[in-house]
Image (cartoon, rainbow, N blue to C red; front, side, top):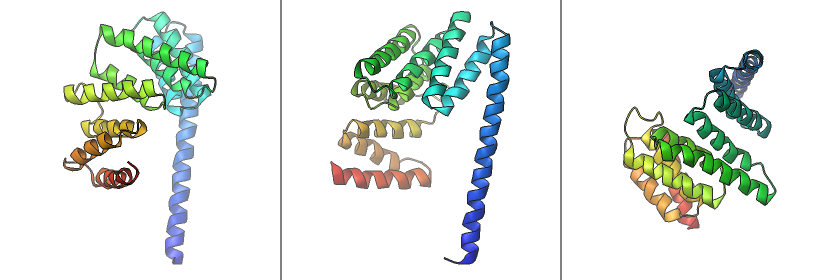
Length: 218
């Protein structure tokens, strides 16, 4: 490898590190400001929801626990279905950190029940997507079953404007769920349909690689 190429790689790594550090610093500042504000204003449910989303994006157990608390506070102030849905979603994600089986199942069942109550009252594609995304993070067979049901429902009923996620990405995630369930033929079928559609070259390459791997292991 030439000196110029080594220097280029070094510069790229340094730039990525700097950008990542700046993003972390910015997130920390956002958290500090919002934490002070929600401590001051005990009636601001919207700021609690925004702060909860930041913690949820961080993804570690401590952050998820704090996000759960904030959504609890939010729906006690303003009893919005969305807050209950997000609270249930977080319970599913927190279950992934539980090593004691009864505790893990409590979080899964409680999270599912909370979300199901909301969806029974108002069956929106956005709500289904939130539930599917939380269940997608789990390795539990029940959760994966719910994720596949919700992704399938969204694909069948998909309409532009009702959900932000692109249909191709939802189909791809459904394929990944089938992989987790070891339903390799179903995953391959989803992927083969996808590569016949108008998708990005990066996604096409990744899907072709996945099909090749799955055909070897099934």
